Image 1: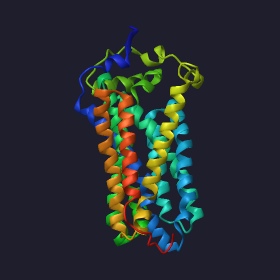
Image 2: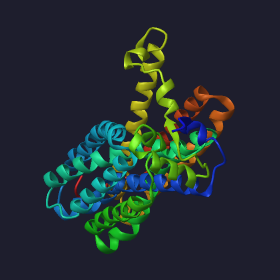
Image 3: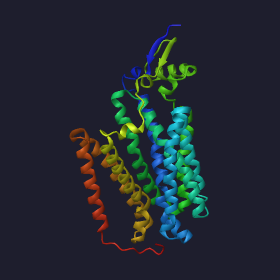
Length: 348
């Protein structure tokens, strides 16, 4: 046998084919539905408040449980991606949050909904790292930042879809139909991708028994390999493994802690907005459809901000970008906080 070392990372440094673009789009679609199902609860809370005659704070535990599930899901999803493959971990995550979202449509009370949203959060959190990894591994090196950015932008795109869908479905069919639709869509996508989405090239390269599958994938990507080729994951060979402690040494400690604090408050403001905007708007006298269009606008702003931030970053660097975006977010909150509206909700 001719042991030809074919490092996957170098083989994939060719042109960006249509098939590769379709693979990236497939991974991105899973995150759009992730963003959709993640924000369905916020869209549905006003209708739930009326049906169950509950005040808005009663749903805080449900929202917290979903976010807690996402935290655990992120760790578990990343671990499973390394152990069983990115493809299988991603599709398992999609099926998990799809099934649990469908089951949430049958919730009879807040306790039941809390449990269901926690387990749905496991799938929601597990999908993102695996989708981003798959998208980055399907494309040439020069296109990888775009592929990863695309998957991130798909989260607010999914939120935009959640608000738009809620505005149409909630007034006519109620919140249970909204969860049924939101859960069914990712299940349909997972069924299609189970047959069409290939495994991560790097994962296949680490398993000798799956080299024929890798060779077939590379051929589909436009890179034919000899029948007796052997494969090496170049990333695995060259990566320098470091612990979290390396980020807390004196030279990096201040920047690491500052970025963690900034990211914490960024996510705090994002999830406060996506989870509570519809119910806050309905309490201010807006109808359910208008309140959900508010959720759509909030997420659409996130999409535009991500694209604008990428442009500023490429020209002026990360520090100016972070400061400019933070200033814009603060200004937006001040404007919203000073809007002349009153709380007219019956259940506050």
